[in-house]
Length: 168
Ligand SMILES: [Zn+2]
Image 1 (cartoon, rainbow, N blue to C red):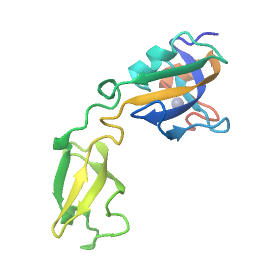
Image 2 (image 1 turned 45 degrees about the horizontal axis):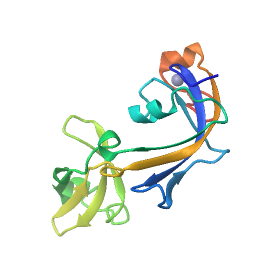
Image 3 (image 1 turned 135 degrees about the vertical axis):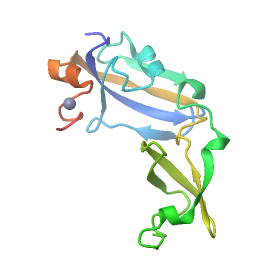
């Protein structure tokens, strides 16, 4: 069976950043493969374009430019926020709010977004709201493990159920 819209694709991949020879940034394993519903906007459009038509056992290797991946790095997405909004009961949790940590936050409209702490200053916290992969060219390589028809329920929900999919 070939990969096409409404198929459930299980694959193993390695993701490298910036070059095809850099160290793997992300690796899946046979115990924990990547599974997704093809054609349901669950992954980058270019990711699907490169996998379209492949079948179980096929190998793949392709790259996606940053502008087609997670976007260019945006200097404006680095902001200083008043320290008090990070405080709970007037106290800053210094184990949580420290450089390099990713914090779940909300924007003005209440949308969930992750921010990375860049620096803790005396009265402000410098946060970076760029996607961690912004500005990075993505290099994927791997193997298609299986391709199957999605169930009615999976198509209805727009995602995969089962061992490596959603549980609910
Ligand atoms: Zn579901």
